[in-house]
Length: 109
Image (cartoon, rainbow, N blue to C red; front, top):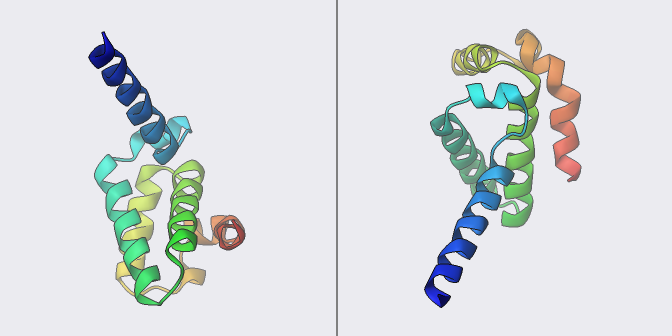
């Protein structure tokens, strides 16, 4: 009986964690888990390499991900990342400029 309760509790914790980490918008379901993982991993690594506080970096990166996946389609996200890799400036990326203020709001969370 106690083992069953422990397993049920672990399942609830895992479900809560997953729901917090994933975007809550319907459009977010279009974003593959690998994209979320890759974004968060890269963002956190870059922040830590700059010497930023780990707690701040994790909050900023999670907020940035949520802003992106709640305010653009997956296709727009793919196009945006492609343009960034090509070396385009933020001003040259329409979907990035559209969410710029919201992304900057993540700095204060």
